Amino acid sequence: MNSFYTENELQQLGFKSIGKNVLISRNASFYGAQNMSIGNNVRIDDFCILSGNIVLGSYIHISAYTALYGAMGIELEDYSGLSPRCTIFSASDDFSGKTLIGPMIDKEFTNVTGGKVTIRKYSQIGAGCIVLPSVEIGEGVAVGAMSLVTKSLESWYIYSGIPCTKLKERSKELLRFVN
Image (cartoon, rainbow, N blue to C red; front, side):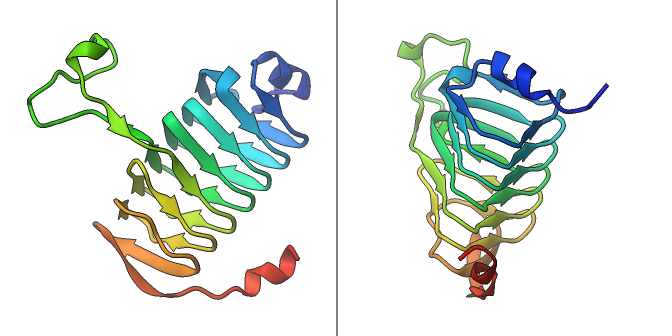
C-alpha cells in the first residue's frame, strides 16, 4: 500500500479545490477539508494537522508533525514551506483569566481573537517554529529553527530567535529557478 492517498482518494476527501501532483500522507488529519484549497505540486507529510480555512499555493512542502490551525485563515503562497514540527495559529484564546478557554466551551464564555496568517512566496519556516495570529511573513523570508514569530516580517531577510529578530538580508538568487 502506498503511504500517500491516490488521486481518486484525494477527490473523495472533500477539499474545496485540489490541484495536480498532490501527495498527502494517509497519516495526515484534516478538519474542515471543504474550507481548504490546495494548488499543484504540494506534499503534506505524516502526522500533520490542518484545520479551518487554509489556502495552499503550488510547489509547497509541509513537513511531518506540522499543525495549521486556520480558524481565521492561513495562506501559504507558491514555493513556500514548513519544516518539521511547525505550528501556525490564526486564532488564540484569551489567557487573562477573564474568560474560559477551549473549543468545547460555549462561545459566549470565551474570547477568541486573531487574524489571517499569510506566508508569502519563496519563504521557509524552520523546524519547530511557532507563528502567532495576524502575521504576514514577507516574500523570500527564512525563519530559523525554534523561532517564535509574533509580528509581521519584512521581505527577503533571515530571522531567528524568541521572539524572532532580523539577522541579515537573504539572497534573491533562488528567483533564477522560477522566473
